[in-house]
Image (cartoon, rainbow, N blue to C red; front, side, top):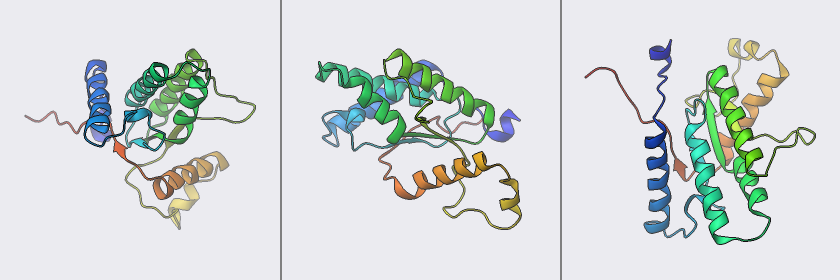
Length: 178
């Protein structure tokens, strides 16, 4: 199943390097002084797995925000980034849940816990990143018998349709064949 679904987990050191490199390119080549922390930078990991890249992006954003600000809004800005401009898509339920747990834990540890009362959530969606932009019709529609799955699909479609993604970041393509 792992091979069939293309499941590969990237070592943390490589994730950290790639995120730092993207942040550097945003700052130096695109002249965005805050790099990934710039409020106009929208990030997508199209196959986010357990969320390693998303976690590292949020660590990078938190570091930048803390370095340039001494006010109490850093936690709120980090939470806003996690909810509205750092996105992940995952097709398998187990890694999707783990990604949510990791991101919620990171936000809580940073002083920006999600509110269940307000139904806050991070921007990780259970979806196929490669599907089209229109909702399914016909036989595929029958699979969406649960309102929660339909809401999940609709939220992911909104990201696909409406967000202007600047950075696509994630596990590089890999093959065991040599």
